[in-house]
Length: 391
Image (cartoon, rainbow, N blue to C red; front, side, top):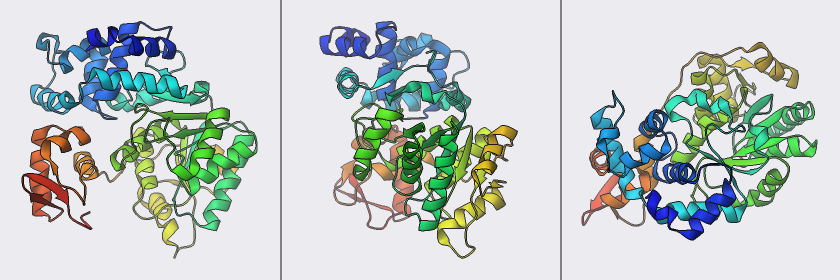
């Protein structure tokens, strides 16, 4: 693949524009992995960590099994190769580079001076690369506090999120959130409103405004802060990628604060990652009968989250370095990815589902069987679709 890319004048030019200071082959290989592997792919992370992006890519292309690092589980690698092969495409890599160059997105690679070392705590699940529109320095500026919460937030939650984010940003803290409606958007706007720094971590490419209603907000964040993603430009946000993105919010934040959250929500997922990483975790209490605060109360009870009610108490989280116990409820990520790839309207063959989900055809086949037993999917003429209301 590297040879093909080096012969593609547009790809080479885009790579040079994106990272003129790094070796061309390494840039091309890193972006290739960014296209081939889904966020958090531990096998890809282990291979790259052991061999480097260039040599690991030769294994992904099936060219040289002798490069396999000692101790690598053969079955895990075989499954990984099966899910990577449908995505091995020089054109897709070229498109990612050209899209980034057109969007003015910078490429951050491990080993860069601006690489946020906080994400390295994710181990083999750390991002292969990061794409940034805006100021990449903010990813390592201190302190950084993640403020997250419900999309369908209440006036109570909006008021507190704005107060906390504004006070903290005015004091120099970088506000980290996910760019979504509700608490995320309130936190970003409050930081911008006081002239403070803020980072929006997206589940799709940095060239795609999601949600569309936040197109103006994300443009302002890119101009005054940073819009960041670990997936290439042009990539659509999916349920699986939102869940995977949450681990980055937790990793980059020196502390995570959940302002409002339902009993089951993406914010609980983010909090679980923060707890697993040993990051300080805070939760804002709400009315005992409020469904939008039920998740915060759960965090205080089950995750040992600290009750926070003021910006000063939030500062104490990272100043004291109080960590939380690791106790998170994590669904099978492969099942989530497959469900996200399925459609309720049109049936898709298993091979296409493997390509969309990034799973091996064998893994897709076994999961489809289980989902069929649960009544979540149905088979029609050799293809599969999700049943209405299925999970």
